[in-house]
Amino acid sequence: MFPKLLLFAPLASLVLASPALTDLETRASIDTSSHCGQWDTVTASQYELFLNLWGKANATSGSQCSSLVSLSGSTISWKTTWTWTGGAGIKSYSNIQLNKGINTQLSAISSIPTVWQWSQSSSSSIVADVAYDLFTSKTAGGKNTNEIMIWLANFNAGPLSYTYGSNGKPTPVASNLSLAGHTWSLYHGNNGANEVWSFLPSSGTITSFSGDLNTFLNYLTQHEGISTSQYLVTAQAGTEPTSGSATLTTSAYSLAIN
Ligand SMILES: *[C@@H]1O[C@H](CO)[C@@H](O)[C@H](O)[C@H]1NC(C)=O
Ligand SMILES: *[C@@H]1O[C@H](CO)[C@@H](O)[C@H](O)[C@H]1NC(C)=O
Image (cartoon, rainbow, N blue to C red; front, side, top):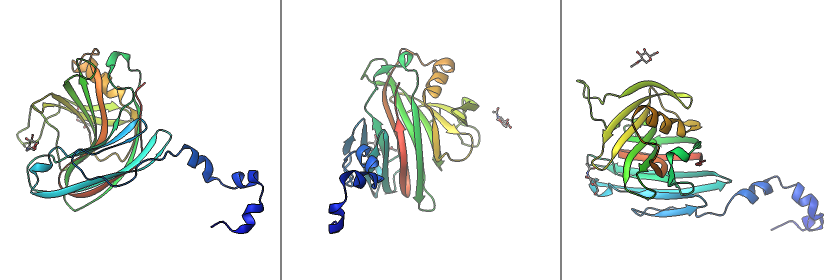
């Protein structure tokens, strides 16, 4: 309840005295409830939280729930908590998908600015990545031809690769690439459905990323034979867990296709 005294204050002074009001005006009303269904989606403006629990059936046990936290302007915040046991492969890719500006030909894209700030708490040994996932196709809305992943973290996982070293580790097709303010190794493989190109940080984990994802697409069209006539059909950012338990919290995320 308001204290009675406030009712006598002039309206203008109430507005000025409330610094949170501008935030409230840009902060959209969104569904912040927890969702745990295998293909649940929650739309928030140009974004969509997508609980893509595609490999769930391979786990002997486990679950994953995700929720949006806030949307302010074009910056969204969300979190996902997972625990998966058993099964060899990836269990899920819960992500924030961009639904605005996709199905654009690569030649027509000038920039894909993004910010991604995140933190994670986890059980002692997890197998997972935190990564952007982009797909391109011959046609707008068509079947995937190329998958382009930009990993910000590799927790005991590894990229798909056509070639492996004698140590059993995937061998990159290019190393020491300076793109978007960080140094990367590029891997090339196939997942049975489409070609997969994965940029992994040369070392460490990037928990605060800010850059232009078009830099990575330009590298692939200039050096790895991906055609600029391809359409960008999907742009997502999330985590691919195989085993363990973790909560990934994205405090700030934005993506746009210009
Ligand atoms: C896991 O589940 C998916 C979907 O049911 C399936 O396509 C895939 O082959 C399974 N196995 C592994 C190791 O991912
Ligand atoms: C990458 O850069 C590091 C440091 O400059 C260097 O030691 C290493 O040999 C380079 N690797 C390749 C594959 O060029």
